[in-house]
Image 1 (cartoon, one colour):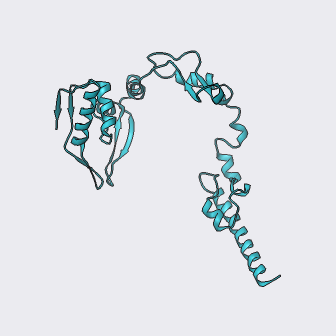
Image 2: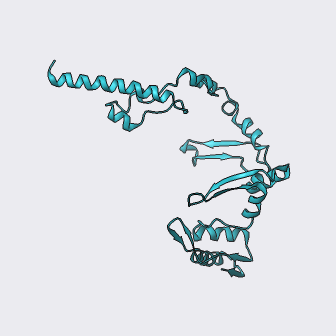
Image 3: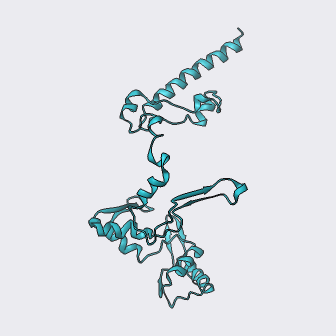
Length: 232
């Protein structure tokens, strides 16, 4: 063996031991299992296509505590064996203006048979806001926390109950919308008044809200919706 071959052999041994230590440390992580990163694979001289880099086995202690301890437990679930029945049962827990057609799910993945498409609850219509907020308030959960939020600045955070959130979303449009997105919402709800301000700051960036609103109002007029008053 030449000196060069000995050096290569030594590096391979070191990489192998490092690889094992990496697998052992991954097994102790809360996530339990995952892929060895491409960076680690390159550093260790591993082939990215090898099966060694695809699987990291969790420790026995972690497996015993996991809710799903093996792939076999995932396969016989109703959502796979009977997706239509499973999702129909889930969907029935929500409010629907109109129920969907008898077929919950349909698909076409063969281009020879037409456009590739996946359709869920075709013919059905619902109200996402009502399901997320009103329905919970009517069930007596208005005082419970619906959302925890964090602002742009450190320490700028808070929480909103279902009742508080309902009051806010019924009056305010997200300030990050483009003029086109805001125009679409104006067209949908046909408001009599739009209230805005000249500008706000998001972190170090200035957002010129008045300019966005002006452009949105121009766009909405093109679609036959004119707002009677703009307050800023």
